[in-house]
Every structure is written in C-alpha cells, then in structure tokens.
Image (cartoon, rainbow, N blue to C red; front, side, top):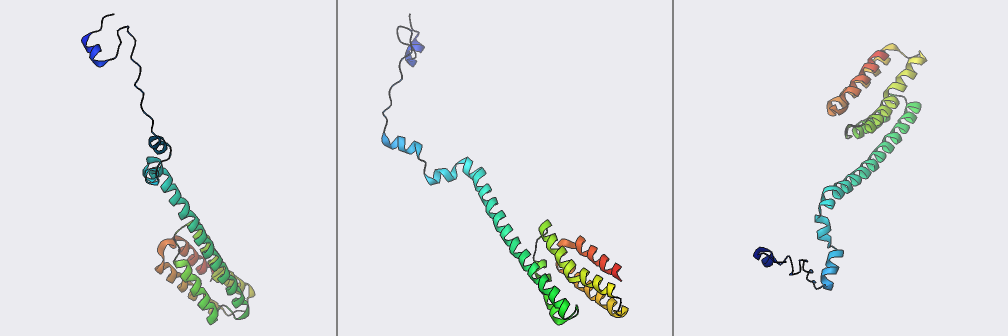
Length: 184
C-alpha cells in the first residue's frame, strides 16, 4: 500500500496500512495525586459548588435561623398573652399593668415581617388582648354601656396605632377594627 505524502506527514498510517500505537506517557505521582484530590479552592470555584451547593447551604441556614427566631417570638408572645390574661382576671382590662403588657406585645408584633406565622401571632394577640375581654364584659351585662364604649374606643386606638406603625398587616388590623366596632 502506497501512502500519500499528506498521510505520511501526519503519521496516521504505517506502511502496512495500520495506525501507529499511541506513545506511552510517563505517569508521575504528582499528576495522579493532583487529579483525584482537588484543592479546596478548586472545589469552591467549581460550577457545581458555586451554582448549586452554596445557595442551597445559605438557604438552609437562613431557614433554620428564621424558624428559631420565629419560635422565640411566638414563645414571647404566648408568655405575654398568658400574663395578660392573669392581669385581666386580677386587675381588670383597664389597669396600668394591662396597658404595659399590651404595649410590649404590640412592640414585638410591629417588628415582625409579613408571613402566615406572624399572622398567627397577631391573631393570638388580638384574641387575648381585645376580643375575649370585650366579649366577656358584654356577656356580664352589669357593665355600664358608656364605660364599655370607652374601652372599645381605647382598644380601637391601640390597633390604629399598630396600623400606623406597621402597615404590613393592614388588612388584618382593619378587620380587627371592624370587629371591635361591631362589639358596640
């Protein structure tokens, strides 16, 4: 078999028509070790790590921190609501202690972001602080109507103050204000 000058220059075919064997490459231990064990820098800069694993890891950390923060906030709101119920039973709904505890809870709730869990905390506060005491007073029927109307106005003022400070839950605050006005 005769080789053309182009094939002969490339060295792709031998005289008998077969292809030449590949030249053996010397294997070094450094090359093998380097290929199987990437450095930390190479791992972090790899597309898999930077595009998927880093955002996923950050997301998990943020979620865990948020859940821990939410749990502590819910615990604080529940603790203050329990103490508020005790104060209502012992001193009444218009005592200075009750006003201070409601103010603490309002401050905690104004710092919350808008979410379903925070709406649940707001619902607990609403029921404990405003709705349950007023319905209890309304059922007793020995309360002066003028005093009852004043308390409804005070509670509406507190909710309107929360609405002005934190418009994130505006729809819920307006719903609660309407419920208080219907109590009268």
